Length: 374
Image (tube, rainbow, N blue to C red; front, side):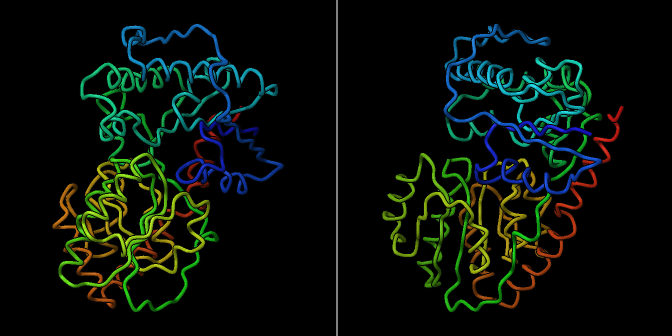
């Protein structure tokens, strides 16, 4: 079976599905399987000129929005690049971004296309303050879910909670499957270590949706209580200057290290103690599974896929979103009690190996793919 994994971001893009797919590719071996990976380079801008028409809604009703205009042009560019670069036929295409799925079905209408929805762009834009609730951008982006349902042959998502989010925007939510992301254990190697001062780490894009302002507030409370720690922030993004300024104003700049973008954080993540990320929304939260596989103690918010990964008090700790007091209390608990911290980490590690292995994801995907074997 000849498979195409259609991404938006290139595989070298850090985090999430783009970094996962190459490890899937290693498990789909010839002669029974042949898998290629496709994505659009960042340099492709304003090349496409195709007229865009969707089957389930008129996108031009929202066409005055610059966000919508940019999305449509990106779709045109993906169409242009796909027509230019893909010459061979495939038995099945698995798309991992709405633009990829719609473009592939437009160009290859007779090829089965499976669409996995990994995250919510409109929810991220809302949380980041880029668009307004109920505005044209949100209505346009949520309308795409029904268009994908109409156009593609099967829809999947990555968590039960995100299926609940998608349900109001499609006609047949019961037909959407759930396959959580899978991770290659060989990339994540727990390393025994004994840090005299608790080492906290977070890995994410530096955007408002990740709740790093709440994390800095919580860390300031820890310092006022006299609890020593170091906070390592791995990642980059538009609000980095604001976060650095906030750390200075809160008096915790000396305890906080901003690394910027790092290609392979999993290589040194095992040397930390506690992974913490107070996200305001997560469809799945791949970085929690990655941290668990490094045997770090997990502290996260009760949102989306995070709450499905962490059983509170068993495999980590959960706190309400937007609550810096609760986050500080949870961090204080695991900082002061290393034995409890290690027990949480060990249980989280066992669950991640059991439920989020690459082997499990490959097994579930093969069952789906084989349904379309001619």
